[in-house]
Image (cartoon, rainbow, N blue to C red; front, side, top):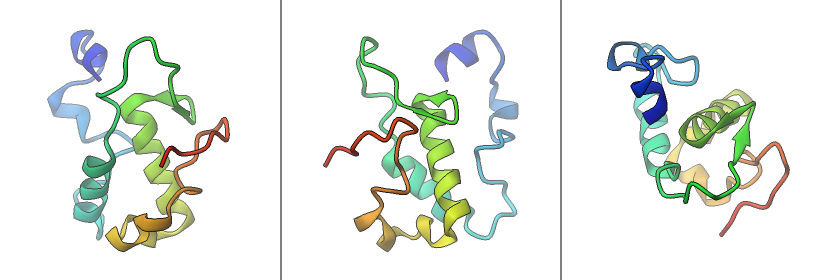
Length: 100
């Protein structure tokens, strides 16, 4: 995200237009954003760590892609109660185990 802001491929004006973000008309947009912000881990990794990928995205956008895929599988995936057992929905394309 930082690199995108620096090279102007991402801006505050078009950030919400990403295909990976909910649009304001989505009936569960608030739940979607809550889950995304709760699970956002991408700013805590060391730069030398191997990057986690979903559909070619890494970092924050990989998380967005995983959440979007989970919603496509079942819209209840963004319900807060669901996240007690969400390991399969948020899997990496490399099939790594989700850390507990």
